[in-house]
Image (cartoon, rainbow over all chains, first blue to last red; front, top):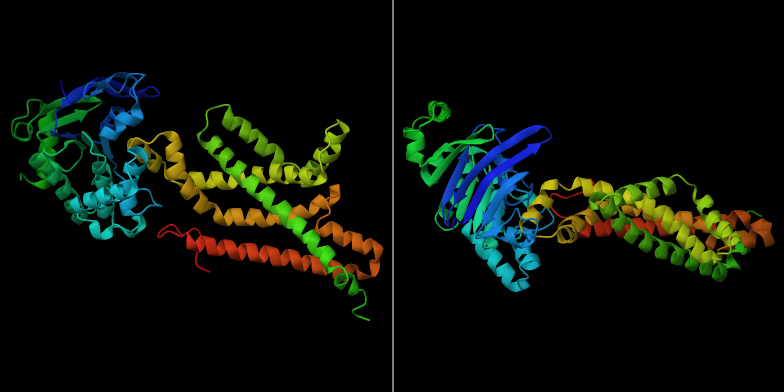
Length: 247
Length: 227
């Protein structure tokens, strides 16, 4: 049994079919990176997984439970799926620490003192314990995103979904966020939609290349970058290499 | 000569202050009820399942479209003709609440829309139910954002409460009128004194709410510019 299994997901908005049958799986503590041109349904796919935007057809299974079943207790299962957003989505009226602890207090019903202790611990992991009492508006973009990661981590999820976590950040801040994510690799399963090819190459266990609502090809970074089977994959990654250099 | 009739005020101070008490009571009861209904209905309009938002919309349109005096007369005289007798004070409370709720829904609704949708998504992805999301994430921000609009509505309601005079609630304005009909010479001073009392009340409310707004201000969340 796979930890996360996505089977034949279809999703349309009106008459436009964004996902045309996507299947893959993620194992415990595995890091998978989804790449592809914009508008190919990568972000939609993530939202289909935790049912924020339920798929029209297909199944999603996490640790033996079917999320797409009508009887699924989504509020409980979502606690096991962390989500890190492109535009952070921090709660503006709460401090960094409260942003991290609110899920523990109000969802996991953890006692307040303990929840805050754990929140501080998570903030330490992302290097922000000094910013614990600051509000989102007082944090830089990179700091906001690291709070977002700490918030997801605090729930002790089985997997964290990252939706282009660095695309709203400048190059310097991107480094801080990627560093945090790199440290998480191998500790918790991650499914990352990103355009950071260097990161994908260095950290991913497997890279999935998506286009037009399909998975075109998937494989290890080495295979994808050096020996891709499909011409389209070679073309896409070739363009990237020309842009950013080989290594 | 110029102070002719000022004794209409000085002789009737306890009588007028008692009226002021009724004005304050009427205002406070109405503003508390209208705020509660306003918040609940605004949430219902934003997050409820049809036909709830539509029904709230219809209610809002109707009561924002009627003069307060008409609402008072309908509740007090209209219902009484149908055998439903409501004491003038309670009729005034009902009228003010129906009227102010319709306006307050708008205040909270615009605050709700000012909160990025992504925060709701983030709360739900933590495993919060819709209700918890509204209670812990949306509501605290809505209340903060609503303070300026709400304080405006509060003072409007205070001033509107004087219309309760028309259905016989013996509040501040009605008492002034009673004094004047017994001693028309004092009319200017009595009205000026009443105006002064209303002004002081409105001024204090605005001051108090300004303080509240500053007290609960959050960095990056200032709703009004520094004055």
